[in-house]
Image 1 (cartoon, one colour):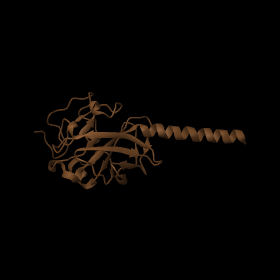
Image 2 (cartoon, helix red, strand yellow; image 1 turned 60 degrees about the vertical axis):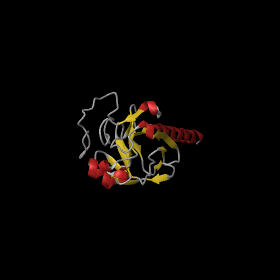
Image 3 (tube, one colour; image 1 turned 180 degrees about the vertical axis):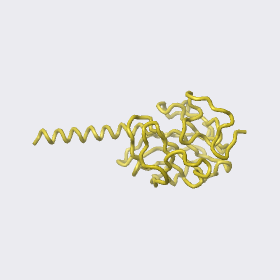
Length: 196
């Protein structure tokens, strides 16, 4: 009986460790914190999540921290984020889909992002806080149709690894325009936007 209990305990511990490893692979990858009226204004604030790991992760009962804890409501797609996939947390999904369509899973989240600087993070369903990013308007993307994009999803969350998107509206649901992996045409952009 003791051997069985030890085995069950070992499986439980490994399961928790595995889940936490999966959690830490979900990162904040792009932020639209100060959208101009050209890309929906204040109603189109959004945060893109990216799963850089090898395990599918459920975001159900997670929250966004932006000074307050904001609950998630599934808008379209699924609660899970597969390896190499994206999910959008949108303040107003209707505004988001009008501009971008539905490029990936969309979760409604009543965020209020500061236009100067802010600290945002994810809180898992067990209350663990991960992926903390503190951004500043000096990084760019303030009321100019651009987003803040992470250059390398495996890199740090300081200014050296973030940059202003090279295209209007950013790249929700796709590889970031500031990623060293791609070159961006100066005319690319989401539906209804152009580069000036």
